[in-house]
Image 1 (cartoon, rainbow, N blue to C red):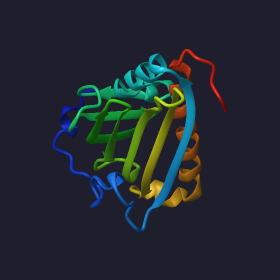
Image 2 (tube, helix red, strand yellow):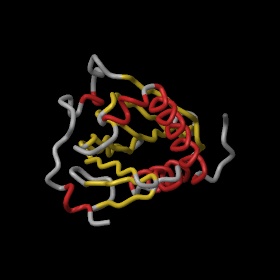
Image 3 (tube, helix red, strand yellow):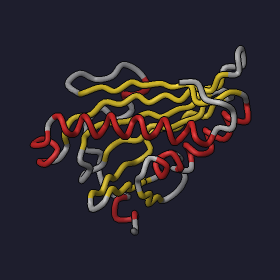
Image 4 (cartoon, one colour):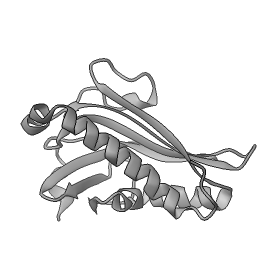
Length: 174
């Protein structure tokens, strides 16, 4: 799939970048974290998988992207016939934290933003994956589907965390 046609697409929500601070009112929220590994090696592996879209692939989505997760990269995720276009809003590139947030583009089933990051704690070696999102239905079928959309989002949030845990080499804690 050629993602270039989505380069000019607009975000379909007003609160671009809001996952950096206080989440905006009027949305459904998701916040979930899981310990996925231990040590620098696991942190590097998880961060690499996250930034190369392998987390999304591991969750069962097909990934079509203009680049790795870098600012303004466009990614169109597909699940069967459903196209899920997003643009990277910002990247976190710190010594012990790596990740990015992307926002939904016109045509996305939802309207909102999702932040993914992995953190390494030098104090105890713990590697933790975090997901924070705000969204509301963005298309007629997601409005009509109501709670089904929330269940799908919860399912994929868990799949994302599981996919990152699988790239870590140390035993996982639940």
